[in-house]
Length: 405
Image (cartoon, rainbow, N blue to C red):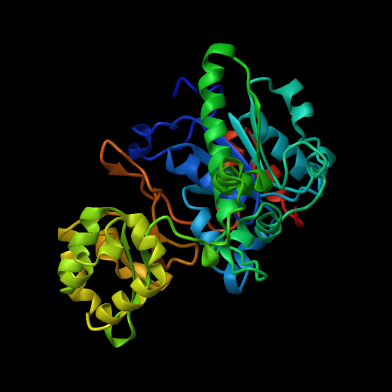
């Protein structure tokens, strides 16, 4: 048993899990969408036994279309599924039994919902003083704490949408950045609380919130204003600190981001493009000179670059340590050679038996990546197994089921 664990429940783990940092830790996850599930996924990837409690019809995230179609499969690997009707006395009682067996409880429902189920931190702390309680919210304590939030909402409130789009056209980032970041910070809080519990013997409430995540993302722009007295301009309107730091059009309609942030990179770029004339131009002697000449400099560089293909430039830029990136669409990442050869993608079996390549957590431990250890769970797939471990008999297990959380 992991010394961080206070639970007597076994984790039903594969041999690989025993070598992982959180083996022996039991997590009960009552969450949906992205933020809470991200926290549970990280803990599960690190070896915890994560039991996701779903309504009998399953987490509604399973059924999302459009931009939400990939949410469930992305953020719910390495979890077991237990289906309970929390509108029934028996189902709610079973959830309380599960929480009593756990080291960590993860939730991300609207304010007041957990209290209505007797699952708020104040109540559970009295019954289970060693429990670590992780609450994912829109806002931490303060005037906004009772508001509902979405990633869009906080991106508008915290300056990220303003910084992403051009003036007058705020634009949200193209991913669920705050939801994912919120789950990550929830998991960081869990790790800190588990470590502290070894000495104190007591659990702790961890809160993570979308708005505060987004404020952290914009802290550099806040401090730019504090340091200079000049408000940060949105990214499309900004004055770059470097002259060559932009997206250029190459041959055949290809686009590539190219940067030359030092004098050595500038000289190497000019050499690759055959532009010795730019090196000899006294108006371009230093980076600051080049920034002042940026309007005409980028135009003339663009004319040169338009004659090259990305495949020809890439090895030269790698050789000379010039930062660059082709403009990639998400679906092209399935074929990315670095991800495939480095083990950054792994085959994940979905709940319908099909497989997909899934990005892993962007960390390695002793050179090893954290792998999927079990398929995406079917709705309620582990209900009987988990409840038997709590002492339920077959009649009690068969009686459980019902409606939405």
